[in-house]
Each structure stands twice: as C-alpha cells, then as structure tokens.
Amino acid sequence: MPKMLVQLQVNGVDRAVEVWPLQRLLDVLRDDLKLTGTKEGCGEGECGACSVLLDDVLVNSCLVPACQADRARITTIEGLAVNGELHPVQRAFIERGGTQCGFCTPGMILAVVSLLQTNPNPTEDDICKGIAGNLCRCTGYGRIVEAALQAGRSAQQVECESVR
Image: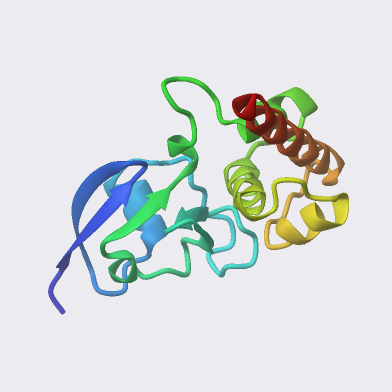
C-alpha cells in the first residue's frame, strides 16, 4: 500500500505528514516530527510511556495508527509549556520529586493533565485511578500522587484568583 498524507495539529502547529497506513502515531511523533519526549516503553499499550492527548483524550500512541489521527489535535509533553513557562503539572512533578529516571514522566504528566481536565480537585484515589494505565518502576508512585494533588490545588488557586 502507498503512503498517505495525514493532517495533524501537534502542539498547536499544523503538520502534514506522509505515513504508511498502519504506521503508529508514536513513530510519526518521534521519527518524523522529532518529538522525542514521547517514549516507547512496551509497544503494547501496557505501560503508558507513550501517552499523548488526542483531541483532549489520553491515548497510548503506540496503539493508534497515524491515519486514525488525521485532522486531530495532538498534545505531547513538548506542547504543555507555554512561552517557556512550565505547565502546573510539570512544575509540581519537579517540586515534589515525581520523577526519577524520567522515562515514564512524560506519559505520567499527560495522564495527570487529562485527569485534572475532568476532575480539577481529585482525591488520592481519583489520582491512582487516573494514572492506572501508566507504569513507573522507580518512584513507588507516592511522589507522583503528591505532585498531582499539588497541581490540582494550583489549578484551583488560579481559577479562584481569576474570579476575583
């Protein structure tokens, strides 16, 4: 089968990429677009290292054929910072030590961002469920949960300040 042209909006930038029909979105992001923050862990959708937001829905990019993402909005870890300012979840991960080797961190951060979009005030249990598809072999999850709680509180503060 010949390659096909897909239109993607990646981190707010419109991109046109020629892909093989079943080429994984993960490979397009990493190899074609050079967005290497998205990691490949298992390649089977079990670890969450390759998590991205596809039209604001958390997905494992290793399981998504790039042709299915045609005309979609994709957010990778590189797209969270705005004008050099880290996203509150990124800041919280740094401040709370929610990383160690860093391999799972991009997917874990995007899982927390996704959770906070639907639940800006999560409990520890909500966070554990929200990151359940993301595996970490280093941290033991405690600091990741603390970072998510802090990010939720930060988001609430910004919301309250904008109302005043």
